[in-house]
Amino acid sequence: MSVLQEISSNMKNVKHPSAVLARQASRINKELREGARKPYQEVIDVSLGDPHRAGVKPLSYVRQVLAACIYPQLLDSTGLPVDVRQRARKLLGDCAGGSVGSYTETAGIAQVIRRISEFIMRRDGGVPSYPENIYISPGSRWSVMNTFNMMVNNKGPLRTGVLTPVPCQSCTIMSITMLGAAVVPYYLNEEQGWELQVEELHRALESSKGMCNTVALYVNNPGNPSGHVQSRKSMQQVVRFVSENRLFLLADEVYQDCVYGEKSEFLSYKSVLSEMGPPFSDTVELASFHSVAQGFMGECGLRSGYVELVNLDPTVMKHVYTQFSKDSCSPVLGQLALDLMLHPPQPGDPSYPLYKEEIQNIRSTLVRNVKRVAEVVNSLPGFCCQPVEGGAFVFPRLYLPPKAIQKAEEVGMQPDTFYCARLLEEAGVFISPGCEDGQKEGTHHIRFSIMTAEKTMEELLSRLTCFHTQFMKDFS
Image 1 (cartoon, one colour):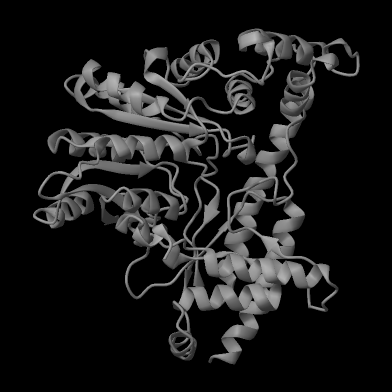
Image 2 (cartoon, one colour):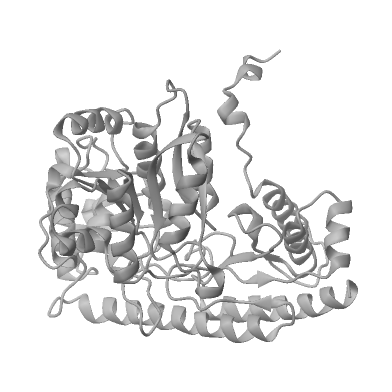
């Protein structure tokens, strides 16, 4: 018998949500490579917010600088713009031994951390940011997991609880469960555009009493997968709520550059906290996360992000250092990409015109994608999609016929998983079922990324329309 039979019960309680569909997609791709005849020639995979996988091109400036950092001989090449070579020399000068192959400090390259701090202050209108409170990580998920890990106490009479939105990206739920903590769900109001309502936070917190010791609130703004963007008033209510109940606030803000709503704007929780002044600004404990994987850069594979910690006790910060030290350092190329994301070319730089053009093209594509998805999905019977104000995903509600729900039960699947499996098999579109991210009982949703090339999105919507029309006929 394998010793892994005795694996942690917390790990056993975690089920990878996309495993069934991922295996199905892998099988279909293998069949296509072997020449199988299907109604499509390739699978469109929009199950993840992975822009480059879905046809969005990398930013030239970013790749040029990173290429020169990896192969310094390019620094003498006139084939690269002069500002690219200057930036690469500067970044290599920040690396130990002048090489991206060297370890960095635990928290990251000191000069990069300083420039992250400068970005935060610029973003938040001058609110102070201190480099010693910032840690670079191999992606924002890693930082979120580490922060959860510091607050989970498995020795108390009750499990640690974390207030978590519904819907919420499945990896967050998995992280909390793996640590042996309790997910305390609070429901975003779908009918009000997935609004976060403080009354629901009070209900959820009250319901957790006696079941777990709830110590933190996790928020995602802009929302993933809901696509909502919080207003200043909503954020102020959240700050008062965590202050009154002495909760730690975790603000996942990785989609801060991706705001599409005409009346929407991104505000960081740190800036709102500062605006509210004492006692909130100097007592509410906050962790804010950002990443190169999301937004217009979309460098998911480079694995880099950061967390900024606010108002933590100095004694606690010593343990933070220990916690974040256990995995050595974040990948160096990712750290450099983070620096490039937060400090891009400026007007007057040789690379600025092309950089500006590429950024505008990506933004225009995403805005068009949002508009097209709303038009097409809301025109299909049995679908209802709330406005997407920000983020990378749409999360439309799916009203399935009773016969489809019955068939799903017969084959042992959740109804929206059944729909997604049929869509993948018959139309070659890989999307995710809403049950993976959580939803109110009795409702069904699908989730897919809008971070795609325009051509990819049009093909996706065409396939979805044809499939959905036939599916509804088959089960009417």
